[in-house]
Length: 64
Image (cartoon, rainbow, N blue to C red):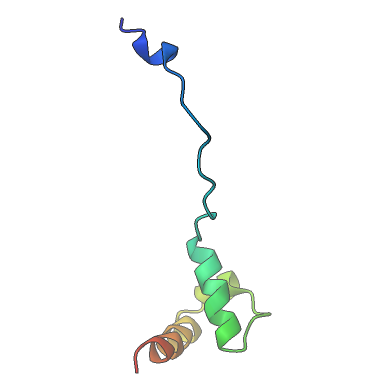
């Protein structure tokens, strides 16, 4: 077995990055833009008709 990997040490420090945004973070931001920030988006997504209305509203914000 090759053991060279275990002997390697990094030089310097690792660069800090911003945390990646998750999909639910994006949904919460979209709800905030529509003025619906207090809504429970998971419950809303279970009602397909209301969810479709929300998605269409967000798409209209993004595409002129």
